[in-house]
Image 1 (cartoon, helix red, strand yellow):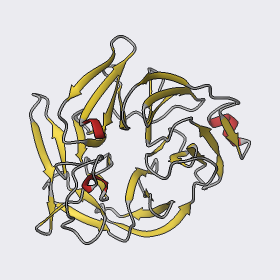
Image 2 (cartoon, one colour):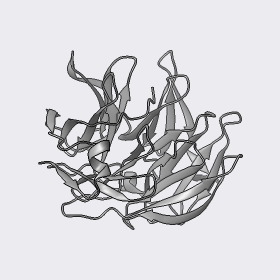
Image 3 (cartoon, helix red, strand yellow):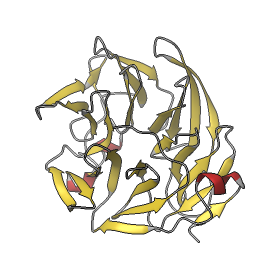
Length: 295
């Protein structure tokens, strides 16, 4: 049994069991899982290795970007272009259809960003990203001083391209996801080990920030990657694996993973497979409720 069931609703969302399949291994530290439905490929990062890779059933593991500026999180925008967070370059980039790279954000208030970490795209095209300091540490990025005196979450306007600071009262902001109606934004804080929830205004700004849930349990790992499924259940990495919450914040249970899990995404044709970036490996399991289509 690779599950810890805390509420019977977990069986409807995930199942009675979730056998893990190790689809690839031999990496340093994997992150940034994102499924490309158009090509049936998994995009993922290996930050210490300074490489972004792809995996598919047909081709196995292939190199996508090397070097990669120690990129971490990825997300597809409304046109199917890949948005990426770069630890070493402290920026957010977009790969255009012709393969060229556009820098979307690198500074705020005249200071260099810390190290953009995770990113999501709203249905209006606005880009939201977290900016902790992990990329200014040796190994996961480049060891260097921090220009900012805070760790924030930002929004890139879809029309003007302007970067705005949404919130800055975090230890280390990390994973983020919208509710299905996009009226709420969930952001986790790795240092504090909790998930916070914000109200999203029509202009894209946010307010609130109460603690919504605290992933707890045996095992190593912390709040990091976070996504929402097609029924509004929130999945967040935490101690021991991936923690699952109902829309009402009830802790439904946990998918236990044998390695520290930093991120994940839904994939395969029906979006009912969860691909997990877990330290040296990529794992896959099947669940009952599909994820949300991103690409």
